[in-house]
Length: 194
Image (cartoon, rainbow, N blue to C red; front, side, top):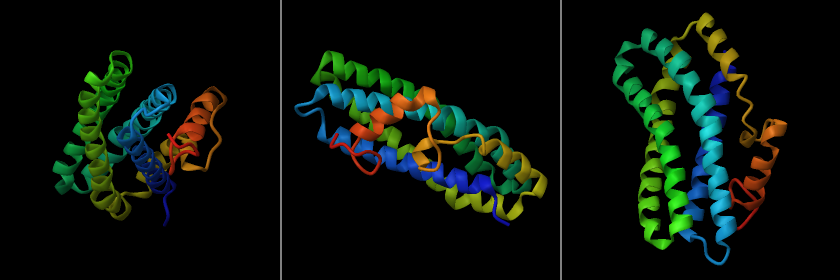
């Protein structure tokens, strides 16, 4: 049986990986001759990560999915503990990176390397995190969770409606955010050149 939450989780992982790839390309190119756009779009992308994956996606995994998987497959304890630690790290790290970006923008090139080092660590951890979930936790969930488990997990994830998956319109309060990202971020997320 196909479970809606697995599709949502994978869609959200895919859109986040594309976002991180776009950000990585943007950071590698740097501000060039348009620093205002560069810093604006990076700030918007980091804000998106804080608003959607950090506040909607991760809590549902940590509070609903992971405990059920752990109960059904206790041998995944090390993996689940790592994923939970990653969630704690990324929630704080995205805000720290926003602060480092502001430092680079306002204080200049002397702050660039500090930002890029922290950003690279963050992206690498995030990509490894999603890979671990998709290789170990999601297949175990698919195989071992009960129908009752799936009802609770599906109901929670169906409320996410992340517009960057391409399947939902943004809520009106997020229109400006998503317009800024899509119009100014480089592909694969946006239409801009960065």
